[in-house]
Image (cartoon, rainbow, N blue to C red; front, side):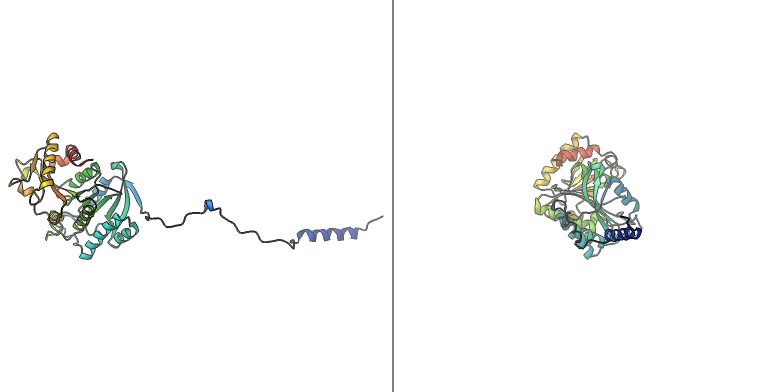
Length: 326
């Protein structure tokens, strides 16, 4: 039988229309699901992260000393009472690991709080509190060893004036795994009224942090030890020993024991020692020191070092490790 070409064309058209149409029983694609094992954890962390910087703390000190208010500059800004209270509170926040609020409070005071990994200290982790650049107030540089159980605070109140004392303090801080390092932020003679001399004023961020840390340690262990580093020049103190140790108005129980240990350890290292036990060395004993004036149970040691010890401090550090190291 002969099939008409027109009939064939009609069949082809019918099949084409059928294949291009959507099926009437199609359903929407199911939504994507995430396996419980791969669900991202979006719960808030217990301690908010801070920015982290790795470097040598020596560089931080170098920048501070190069850019701080200089002698006779009138560039140091005396902090208001509220600002002093803020930094004392900030210390408490760090102790409580309240890092978010601590960082915010630092920012409000033109400071930055960061994690600092110190390459010169076996990459020890510190909270570093530093004034934002450029330095405008001269309030200082502060390091707090993360999760430290040490009861030792190292201080350098006279950068630039007592030359190299900040780096000596840093070396001691590292060697003793100390709790904190406090470095003043201005030359002691920056202001003509003496307000920039951190060892002789209580109206400063340096002093506020000192008091807050001391109280925190006293509460936890009851035996805070503060080593405050100063320097003198032999040309003005002929016949003086290389290191002079002062303990405030007078030495008692614990101070007498530590003083003897210091004398023995320094003598082993070939360093001559002067102890402020009487009328000798009184101009270097630090009895009018602002920080020792508020001491309440802690041991405060005012350490004066001649220029040779500050230039080569290996023997000094070794002696202090013998006395205070674990």
